[in-house]
Image (cartoon, rainbow, N blue to C red; front, top):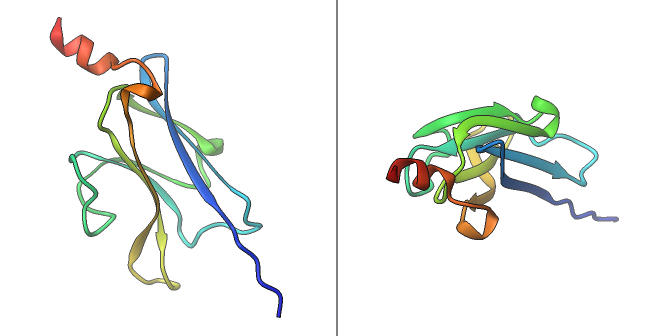
Length: 112
């Protein structure tokens, strides 16, 4: 029996002072009800659909989404999907924005 391994990625980045997120996969199929989330907390909630500040379906925005949120460090971002069909959501990929990803514009604006 043949097996295959697939990978999903998300990459937050700064553009025009905002938090943008792009995502991709090498799978020939979409994650089950896949969603991209930005959380309003400084942790990943145990339920991936809780404490969300902004979210998008993974088949929208041409896989490159301007969240409209100001760029800054410590944005908790995730790609989530249903585990079994119509089942609970689970994290596929998680990431947190850092200074290494771009200037901390939101912090600079707050300091002024």
